[in-house]
Image (cartoon, rainbow, N blue to C red; front, side, top):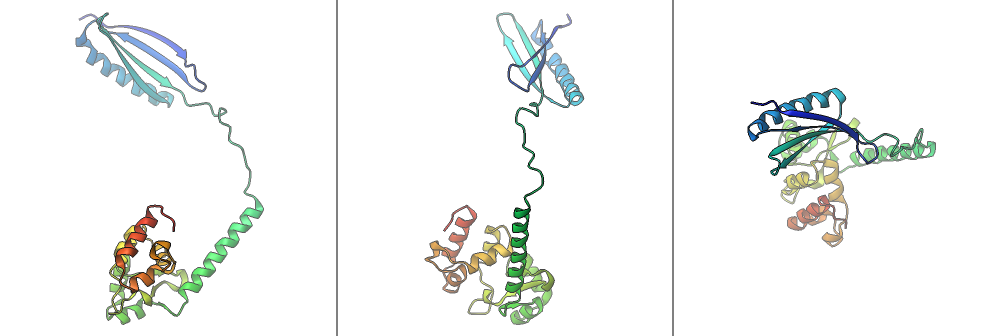
Length: 227
């Protein structure tokens, strides 16, 4: 079997930031194609690892010449100065102060919410349900009950999440799933008014037994709808 002939040539690509280096192998017979293709593939892997750049293949078939051409092209990354990044330096002091103030207000609001009279500890909520603290925490983790993290105060459980029969609303697991399993997201949804609920809060709609509308509203919110 005649050895395949290889011609090597290199050149820079015409677009900015990309350099191309290629080699071409013309095969005398179809039987050699798979073998040489595998060899070029292995060479390309070694070359790519050595230079740290991507290597792509181009295979051309010329039926008139009864030959195939394999051309790996080494693509260099775009030069870093093509799209210069402005050095903005340190964050603006006024912006930093505003962000710090917003975080402080957020922490204060969380503290106010979890300190409310309608917020029960795990022990108090368990007693209300006639179960144990362990069971309450297990149900919180599975989304069956709503428990928000009060940091220093630990998890707090809104007493208003119970229906008229004293059981957690049946829609709570679905709400957790739709809203990213975030207890705070579920809490905000329930205490906020929604246009798609005719201005009712999610909680009020649940209290009125309108679970279907509540779940539809939550699904829309999760999908990016704004009301």
